Image (cartoon, rainbow, N blue to C red):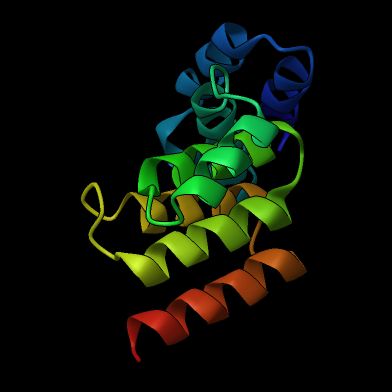
Length: 138
């Protein structure tokens, strides 16, 4: 837990390079630790959201073309960057509903990263997993 906490502290400071170095240096025997899994997912999300567009611009693109999957995916990342995980989950679930296989299942993969970053007991992660599961098996 201390390793994950240190990595999250560097993430909070915007130092993704040091956070990555800390996590990559963690002993292999801790690979399955929930705190490390969450910290790795948080780092992956921080790196993925570093260069996303503005939410207003992306919402305008979606209003003009609701089938613009790239705009919806980018909007989800922008919402994550704005600390709106719930909004990001909603957009990714909508993208998954519209096209499960877009970019080799990118929406599903991103949802799993978000769920991992939130942790197994987080209510948003639990709700999101249930909704995704119902879409997969419907």
